[in-house]
Length: 179
Image 1 (cartoon, rainbow, N blue to C red):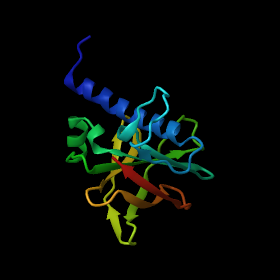
Image 2 (image 1 turned 180 degrees about the horizontal axis):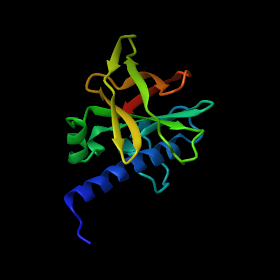
Image 3 (image 1 turned 120 degrees about the vertical axis):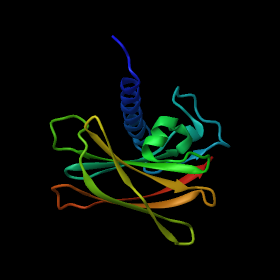
């Protein structure tokens, strides 16, 4: 069987989405807020540590689950960054959102939604985050970027209106980027 460049890129895309989903699920279990502090010695869990580990948040609703994570843009491969139009640099963070349909028979079924996100700094100044929809192999996620060159603490305010639902999903959380 011949492996082509396209097949390799598809598998890398699938692997990236699966890793993000699993990381969000594992890092958010039992935690409402999480931050990475490189000054502390992390426990030896066998998991990635430090700034490469995404900061994950999950909010459960009746029919939906909203998952969000923030990670360094430097964890993206060159191909993924180019595909999503992200210019990678050390002070750029990526916000990744996924809306799961809890009523679906399909495990981890994602849904389309109208998504908006913004962040506020410690002074209360607000800025919209340009979110884009990404579909790979039937899974939909939404990504946007945060410029962390002048601030490291973000209050994120996320709203999602799943297609076919009248229930707006709201998520608010703080992210402290200590990298």
